Figure (cartoon, one colour):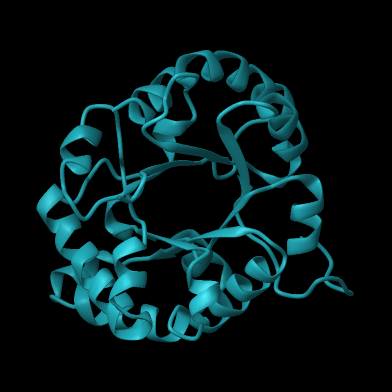
Length: 249
């Protein structure tokens, strides 16, 4: 049985003071939420405040990116060992915004993923197609490419530390959402790719999240799909009441 993971991606929002206030309101709303694992992936500057606020709770804290070197002359970057030393559990790798705006490739996704796992972090690894690719019926081809170049190069031991988030890029921040059936079809493709690369048992235990305009009013219909094992939540995770309703679906 795959335990759902509800993960918040705050993107570039909130100050440390905002973070403390969020957790003060959020933690009482989810303290009895045992049906799902909960993670909040905050901006680097907010991680100390998040970790302090979440200490002793049922909420884990993660970062939104990392570099693949452990240390060195890489101005502005953060390494896996740094995040682990801070107390992070999770890190997001390969988010569509990193691919779209900051030159992330399938190759660098693989390098970052390996570095994160070597540092003892668990990875939320993002895949998904653009609108023009969806309209050209290329969703499956895109997922094959991203999985083959960015995931299949992991060892079985590394793959066991990965959660995959399917995020149709056209549904992120647009208010558009893939139908539950569309999302489930993409998740089935990903699980098939995982089985081919790592075996049926590994594929069966792989958690695949859906990301793309997840909100309190659509989370139940998404989670009713057998193939959907949780959500990577953007805008709706910024409000404690909203995100708690998603966690408590």
